[in-house]
Length: 250
Figure (cartoon, rainbow, N blue to C red):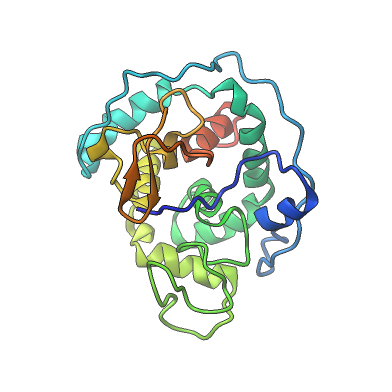
């Protein structure tokens, strides 16, 4: 399991932190490069369903099979609510997904993968930095150093974001998925990070952090689970739910 969190909390406190958080994608017709983002937006009011109380009665199924988990994803997505204290954070990340949509869609359309899947993985693994590998957030100046190592296997560095991201998605067979229903998107996002939270009876923070379904429990290093550690990274499902509420995804 990935111990580090690529997506920092927001809003960003200062300009130096902002430069470290994200990169601005150019038009989809040109390879993305890393440039400083605009300042984070101010916190917004939580939606009417938001609450500050985590739901303690959440017990994920200990399985890796999609057919076992399909119903759980739909149920958890319907039940999850944004915790009010994180409303501004989620707004920050969702605004960047929308801002970079054209780049994600350019790649997704060529592989038959929804733009939103690529976008949330880019958020989680790279903090929206277009100067890093989608595989794991390592710099594009060289092949990946962390797992998966030595990617892309072909070509020569420095890599463009598009060619490296394509390699990451094809390497995992995501261009062969076909079914991209909401439960399948959530399944593939969790699979991208790993199913290691399920044996610990913890909803994966990779999906559910900042929602009422998640309290604590986090891998603080590879294979090192701390039941008291709390994720500070916005969960992918919260981004998806917010985009759905705004009509940006179905």
